[in-house]
Image 1 (cartoon, rainbow, N blue to C red):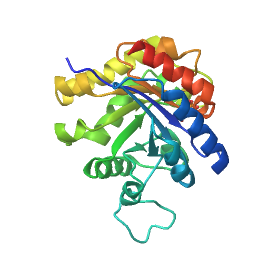
Image 2: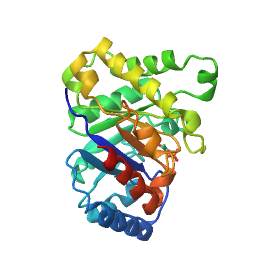
Image 3: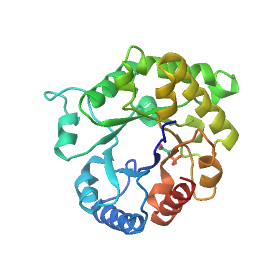
Image 4: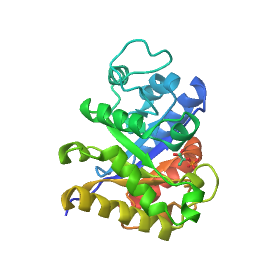
Length: 256
Ligand code: PEP
């Protein structure tokens, strides 16, 4: 059976100035350089203005973009193209984060278009999916996640799907301090893996990394990441604190 990588990704969102990003990136780099694990991927997603500064210190971790627009170039004021990300040697991008879907009204069509653009340009997309508390209260969360997966991935070929990382991020857990229980995370991750087995094939289901996001911190990391179908985490708030973030990374490293 394929050994899936363990992934710890920090989403810095719209935080930090140059000096703060530089310090955080340097401390992170110092902290991860003693971890020798080919199966562990450490990533951070700074805001656009911080990509260069962060990349300069990123020897032992990777840097990705929080967003991009899926057109080659042209009259898209305020947007950043995938070619501009490649120009910075970036290899990862977030796609479909719930803050973009909700605050910036990103449609499933746009999410899908971004996903395809990333795959076609050799940028690994982390496709974020997750239900709101209303949907979970109505016990519609499994159907909802299946529909988000279908909208984003329908008609992709297995070769394309094999390039994706999935982040299950229940909206009710993002930035709220309320984390999914290990049981809730594991049952959804197993459901998502099974969705890939049914809609693509068992090899893809077994090899696709599925990470969890939503109020992860150094106190709940061990429980969440011990789940067999949870391959790591997308960490927001706690990734801004280097000690917290390193502690999460070390926890996952110890499990891999
Ligand atoms: C996120 O924004 O992807 C996230 C998981 O945020 P937080 O860890 O702050 O809930």
